[in-house]
Length: 314
Image 1 (tube, rainbow, N blue to C red):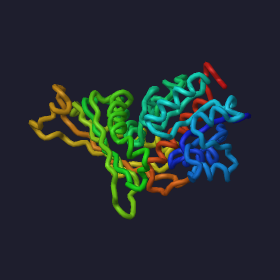
Image 2: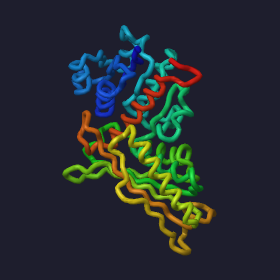
Image 3: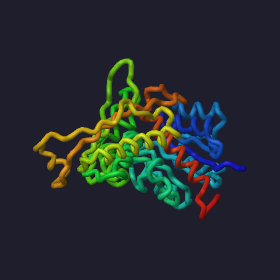
Image 4: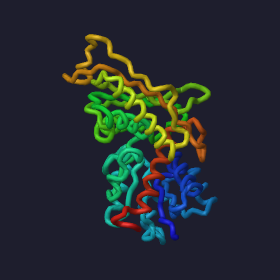
């Protein structure tokens, strides 16, 4: 069976880790090009050593490559602004784009939650590392009971935040907040990112705080079961994804001014979920789980697109 040819734009940390995942893990994808703009980048050097065709002329160089017509899927691991230009340049060629930046040109995709809904989209967005880690939890709660408000805090090692991440902090919070609502199902979402300077670096930790308005113990038990099932589902493609502590569901303080968060909806309990994401260390240290969850999710999406749908099998 022939493999689907893919290209990676962006020879930095995320793009290089993704390339290695395709080479090591995928039985259905074939690396056809690694694209960068810095001829001296480690990503391009590694690609050359591994026999992957390269160009240091960005998307223009990719389009000019002799086997460009054979490439079906293009991962973009650059920046939000760069993806806008790359998507415009590639649009006439009919490539399927998987966007690992916060550009959000196409629909948000979190594999464990809504992958099957967007298999035909020409450009899918992988939200953010914090979104990939926490939106499945919000979705797990909202499939049991309404979530008037959900807030996530993503804490990542400062050393794992490259220039692209740092340049896109505003886009991170805006994109993640919107996706908590659009994909996670919360009525209102908020996202916070923390760059942790601790030494030695700590692995990614994520906190999900959600307000619900159901005091029934049976509902609470169902919420816990739903969250645990979702964690297991994400861990299928992100093996280092796990609960750090048992799910906590606690009554809200009487007369707490929660209308500032949940509007006029009556809320009774807070659901608190604490997660860890340990990276697979394919290219980067294990503490860089924030990068690993992005590349693992993108790989999952690409393999599912390559497999096709029952109505349209490749």
